[in-house]
Amino acid sequence: MRAFTDRDLEAAGRLLAARHVAHRRREPLLDARFERPDVAAEAVLAAWQKDAASGAVAVRGGATVGYLVGAPKADPVWGDNVWVDSAGHAVAPGAAEVARDLYGYAAQRWVDEGRTAHYVLAPAGGDGGPAAGGSDALVDAWFRLAFGLQHVHAVREPLPAAPAPRLPLVVRAAEVADVPALGALDVALPAHQARSPVFGGAAVPTVEEQTQDWADTFGDPRFPTWVAQVPGPDGGPRVVGAAVGCALTESRTHEGLALLPDAGFLGFAAVLPGARGLGAGRALGERVLAWSGEAGHACCVTDWRATNLLSSRAWPRLGFRDTFWRLHRTVGH
Ligand SMILES: CC(C)(COP(=O)(O)OP(=O)(O)OC[C@H]1O[C@@H](n2cnc3c(N)ncnc32)[C@H](O)[C@@H]1OP(=O)(O)O)[C@@H](O)C(=O)NCCC(=O)NCCS
Image (cartoon, rainbow, N blue to C red; front, side, top):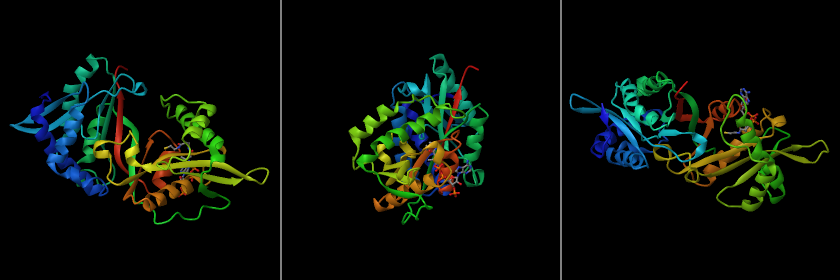
């Protein structure tokens, strides 16, 4: 074991490219370019060039069999942190156990620097893992370092058309008159995620703040928005849900190997608490899946907190398949 240096970029690129070949056997919608060692090495370089990056390399019999590179993110929501991003680690086939040595070497420095919240973006485990390239073994190694599954990235093909929603639901493009309802829905998501069992760290804004935000930005063609409505108590339509689509490149959460090419993004969806579980989320999600195709995207990506009991059940039911898992550990307890 030794510290990662510039001289390790080429070997790291080879290991990452091999990891990605195995990963793409499980999910062909991932970006084929990273199967090339030179392109993978560029992704490692981007991770390595981040401020305060550091890491480790494992060498056995003269050959590099694993590497790990992490760097802090500035956003205070992540705490005193280090992130190992999608290009930040790979091990040789059959050498998943080495991930534990790499972390053991690198993490001492991170904790000595006071960075005790650790995040790792790993290829998702699941069916066919070890047989298809050892991905489950890698996740298993992280789990035996006290990491747990915090967040899921996922993808699926666009829909050729949105199926008709279950009656009496109607899904339509949002209008300016929907801005107050959109403001309320924009609070419903962080309010849900602030509570058990997510306990997310993001601040919950007020309905007034979010309504003003929607009023300031409504109609931006980069962010097509739909609402779901049902008959209200007075018989008139009542908006109970909303969803926003955009190009995946608009998202800060997806970078490196997790930034899939030509991808649309289900960037926001929420249904009011009293209307959940009745099909509005499915109808909105399917609308965004159909829009992804209409807009010429090859696929549609979304992501969710693994601890969000609602979205973690809804989006897989719509056919989204896990691509990357964000694993998380807080040191010191
Ligand atoms: C996530 C959310 C948008 C889903 O909307 P919804 O209207 O509740 O979901 P739906 O009723 O359309 O259900 C969608 C699918 O998930 C399934 N599902 C929903 N709740 C479920 C539950 N508690 N257990 C198991 N499956 C469930 C449904 O069966 C449905 O699949 P099906 O159509 O094949 O039967 C909504 O619950 C919500 O606003 N949650 C809080 C905010 C949030 O988490 N937003 C998403 C952030 S990523």
